[in-house]
Image (cartoon, rainbow, N blue to C red; front, side, top):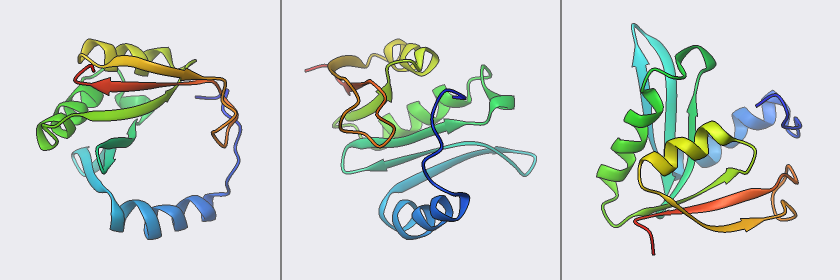
Length: 122
């Protein structure tokens, strides 16, 4: 997402992963031949992260991570996604997620309009 502003340094991002994501969220990593292709992180019914490396996009990695998250959380999931991230939105919609809310971005760090999705739909 080259259009997103960089608001954190690499060191800040590493510290966030070390102190927040890894100890407090359920993280699933997709890999092949020792290379990380992507990961997901779920916390309290929210899909907080789902990232796939650019080289692995379009190969089903995102679908696999999303399916694993749904299987591990049969009660359902919610997620936020930037409105401009049309590829991710299409992935979630193909999986049955429904957009339940939109925002102008005033409540996220990037100040980027976003959407809240839910599965199963309310």
